[in-house]
Image (cartoon, helix red, strand yellow):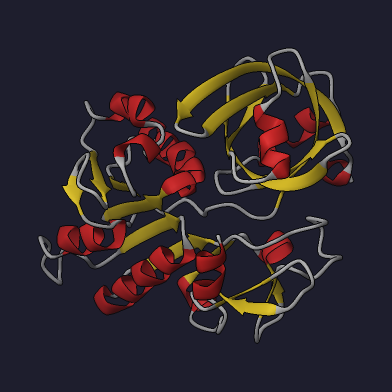
Length: 291
């Protein structure tokens, strides 16, 4: 299957998004990856291979008319540091697209909400532009610890002349409202009546503690949610088992990374546990402290 075959691609363009985050555009023309263009959906990911370093999963941040796919990478470790050291014209290995993506809402949906935190904005930015093309009205909330960590602010300016609403919040109050994204989301919902929120849907990606709070808020207001989960992945094709979710045994790489409310209600690990590189489960709180 072509999605599990590594293809060597050339980096065509690099954008410095904000502090420690870059977007890389790579040319998939003249590769087998072009066969998968029609299957591309926001929320899917690729495995990025840096020769001599490692292979890691990365959410796709979009594609353009020039035949390029893109990833947006935060420099957090050995492999991401190696990716950040790459220059225009260098080559990387790509495998994908992998996993499922966000399911687009049907025409009966009245309200659409997107809630992202940090680099969790990567698939949501792409999703928001797809909604914009479809003339869907939506509210997008981006949260970060501080202004320097907000991504795609310039890109999202293009959506401000539509009927959609773009809101920002930072924990230190350096940009937008001083709060976390889940708090901003609930404040937005409080402006609606119960009847107004019938047939609403939300999409979220970011730190899992944030997403779990968004999930609780959606349950409270009876809003369907699609959440993109992140787990350690060595293979991206269901072999290593490091991304397994208890008690269902679902794999983030194959059954996700996007899960609906119906499934999220049954995942006991959601918002609580992840697995480390040995497969041992550790609390998300503990992992956050270690990071």
